Length: 77
Image: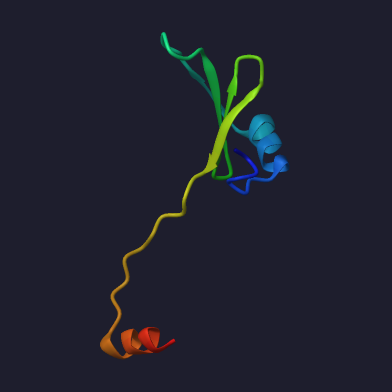
């Protein structure tokens, strides 16, 4: 998953070393896991440290109002 989501291996290593570690309690379908969060990267591992998945936290979008002139420039480009 890391390669598909364009997350560098060093980002994962930094998440484990410096990030916030949370325990995720499992249920009857999945076992207990750890969740590491650091520098907008979330990394999930098994209790043994085997990678499960990872993703980046998207940057927040800010709503911006544009005028008609700018909209025309955008449409023409």
